[in-house]
Length: 411
Ligand SMILES: C[S@@+](CC[C@H](N)C(=O)[O-])C[C@H]1O[C@@H](n2cnc3c(N)ncnc32)[C@H](O)[C@@H]1O
Image 1 (cartoon, helix red, strand yellow):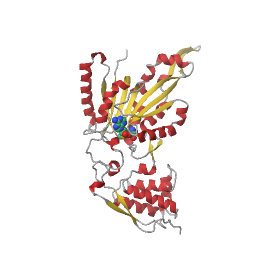
Image 2 (cartoon, rainbow, N blue to C red):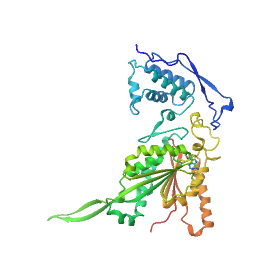
Image 3 (cartoon, rainbow, N blue to C red):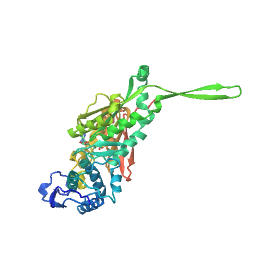
Image 4 (cartoon, helix red, strand yellow):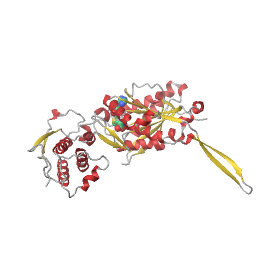
């Protein structure tokens, strides 16, 4: 019988950081240390035995998603395919598939890190976001499914995108440039707090794929035969080019590095043919002054109120400034609300992922902000941010807000 090879011949211990949720990444002084026994090498075990044992171990130490964790770590250690690896594992029910010594060592190292509550995304170095496999490094926020929903809301429901208003505002410029097929109209998007870059990258790719209805011009002409008259409709697609320009900002240098890497990898062709431009800058929302204004602002800012209890794999590993934003979680959101009128074109939209307690607080904050505009600046009535709507996420929580910036009625 084939055997799972051994690299360590006896049980050893790993230090497990405290699972207290004091939101402090440096919690050693709490003296709350645990030690976890890691079993000896799983020599001679079948894959189902390895899986079953490892799941039990993770469960014993209260690690979240034990089954998925073990499967994904094994896929990684065995260098199986990202998409089909878990299925492949499940097919090895009877055969005695054997880990090489290096696979065994690699798997048990990953398992012991998981026992420290290290997020599976950091252990694998990548994760799925919509159709994209994005690279991830600590301490960046691991992209969440709610943020996928935010992106798809913008793609499918954003008014600027749906009505093509960004485009029609530029019609003169477009007509001038139409003949020489130059890029003639940029759809400009700002991603505030880009982290791994998932929001801006996915939006750039999705929106540059779309056929904007505005790019088609229809004309109808009557045509008659001896007995009937029919109407022929011809659709002339205007051969004009659109470029999606994403500016991504963050205060974390690792975010800038990783989001650039992800954009370069995932958007290579489109950056090359100039249908997308992606730029990431190390600057805070409060200090950011763009060269040109935006049509859409999107953000998943830090929004967790201080003191909220989080799972160990979140509060021990992901950076505090990606998670928390003051007493009520509104610190960065308030900065964004204040900066929006300066950042945006007329009738721009802003979408944010927020804490479920935030929508009414944001409405209140905007009322205050708009009163200030009325009191101080009568000539500038359009410099307002209006609350449009909040939306629930897949778990039924009020998670997203949509705002309208610098509203100017169309004539
Ligand atoms: C919740 S994470 C979101 C990351 C990524 N957009 C996502 O959805 O996965 C928030 C990000 O905002 C950044 N951030 C925090 N304060 C900021 C500020 N004042 N200005 C710009 N970015 C900020 C953090 O570094 C972090 O990367």
